[in-house]
Image (cartoon, rainbow, N blue to C red; front, side, top):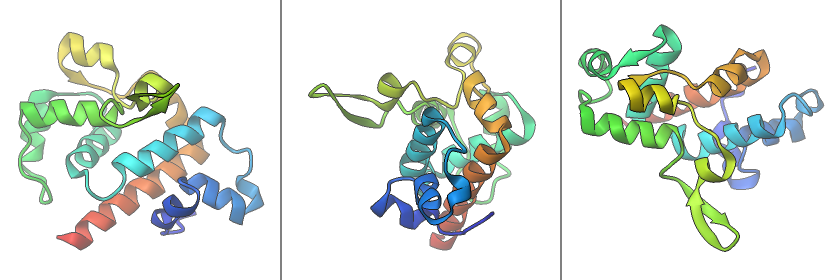
Length: 167
């Protein structure tokens, strides 16, 4: 169900899923706690209509599977809504898609969301070892769930629409 309103949830519940679960009983219990956290952080920090390089890489990986840096750079030249990627931008994309840049407090200290909750989209071993962008195994298992996939896709589509409307 595309509700078209994931943005309003962040002010009240910080999560599109939590917003829907309050409004529609059929959403209660559909996702486990880690899937809920993942969607919360994805919505707040990546699918916010500002991270267009991340959206491009994510869409490319979802459509074609793993991609080398060269393939992503080449493919980005055909994308109408971003400037062509380069190695520096791809490093930033990796950091953002794996929630290393975004921080919150834990035990009085600031730490990355990845360090606290272990959420990530890109497989770090494949990236560091081979320079290959591929979806993390845990993320792929989340995405195989129809409920998660629909909620994730709603947030991704919202972010793209929000960004396109700003062009």
